[in-house]
Image 1 (cartoon, rainbow, N blue to C red):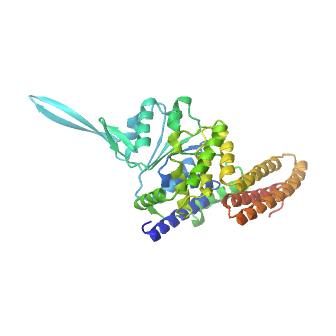
Image 2 (cartoon, rainbow, N blue to C red):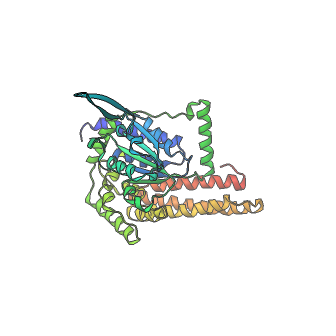
Image 3 (tube, rainbow, N blue to C red):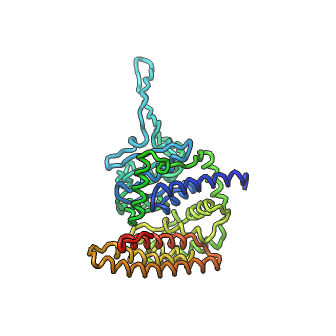
Length: 398
């Protein structure tokens, strides 16, 4: 690859941006990695979740790190028409046709509108009416918009939808254009919510620790990184793993259609580049769990199939985390003070046992040369659960 030193510096900047986003936006690690992969692979994404869970803030903070990038945001409604998105004003030019005849030439202007945006956020995206839907389909598919019958190029990199509603049946084809899918819900861990409020407090107070302080990447640098994504090697063995995942999902009634299938490698290549690799490895397959589900009820099925194929040790760690989550929720949800201490003691012992099993899995993965990132994340989560249970149920600070 050309200019490897410069590429590495750009990647390092992007990773520092990711680190800063994770510091400030508590509990959104997978979403943040997905948004960055979307930008690098020039894909679109949907963020599901209730209002007030920082869906737009995630994207806005990421965009703040990109110099020279135009950002567009709009709330859609059933009566939103294409002109609401693509037309800022109109020029009216009077033309003299001779013999006393005149004609008014009307030319739409689009300063600051969707057709000039590199990154766009459309809230309540599934409220489109047919005319607006057709205009967006052209933009999403071909990065074009129509002006007086002519299709003009747009600089769009990624369009993100934000919504709390699943798409209706007649919008399935539109939904399929969005590669990344994330559910952004309430942060469930009490200690993480406390950390989030503390950061918000520091930010309002003007304390530097509460401010977003990330490096900048120019539009030119981003485009260079996008080109580097395309050049990342994808071994045939990885495509065989992808095929295995898709076939296993098909057996469970989850179909991945060709439109998304042919773009999955770009997701893997973007993730590999973020990990400073020039070749896709099995670890990168884990990102597919955020690309292959349509209905939220299938999220866990997709996750388990991807983990089973990509990293069986990580699947075992995830199963341990699922059990740990149930134990934590039961202990912290107990309202009877006389039972809370007993449940806390039991939960403490069970979580310690789970932590030991996760550590053993981590050691096994290291010995086998298998990816450890997912298992390390599980270990960190179980340790947070332990701290929360001991503090809330037993009154002890760890």
